[in-house]
Image (cartoon, rainbow, N blue to C red; front, side, top):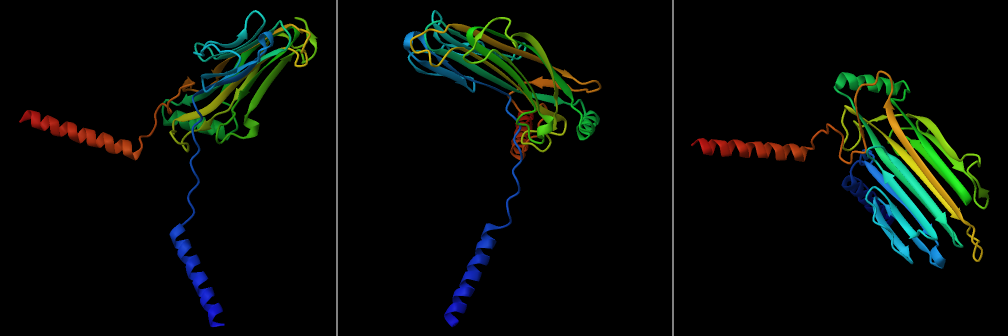
Length: 306
């Protein structure tokens, strides 16, 4: 019996010691400010029987298979052979954000290209009074800007294409009802398309852009509000089962939006900035460095006067 009691006491002591060492539960981590710009995409080309695959990840080109891709510098990356099979992706942020994809297939096989461009929309109020007004609008469920633009889709032969625009995705503090999207398709897989196929041609879209305060985010402040815009373009040509018979086709997809502030909203709109918000609060370590630098400067000036 004593042994059982001793074991129980030891277990209780070890449990309490462990509780003391572990301490109180750690506070929840602050949400991270969304990244400034991201460009990614994938491609597959089948030139003269040789498979070429490649893509863009965070702006860097990668390629594997029977060929090399052209370097990406915010303009174009392409894979394949232009005379028989070619897949291309292009993403631009300036002067206007846009994403473009194209696929061309003349020989047997299939070519496909898909690109995604995501960028941050940062709204910086002029002062705290303006920021309080924006916070009141957000609490009322209002969107602070509109993303409107155009897309153009083509498909000719055995091909199809599509384009999409999405707002508010991946923003801490925004719910599903505050994300909006628009999508358009031109043609379908395994069906021969013409310029008059439903969904092909030029079109337009308009989406609300909701913002979230950045005050509680790492790198945020009380004057800044954040949202995101994401663009997708996809193009496909040929058919996967066309091992011996060519099914030629050409497809392109392009989407190009603009962001407009809502009536009565006053602030500076920054699109795609890779740094922190416009007026970040310095970290304690930064304050220490600045104070040390100021102290050193004062000491240097005093010695110079002597």
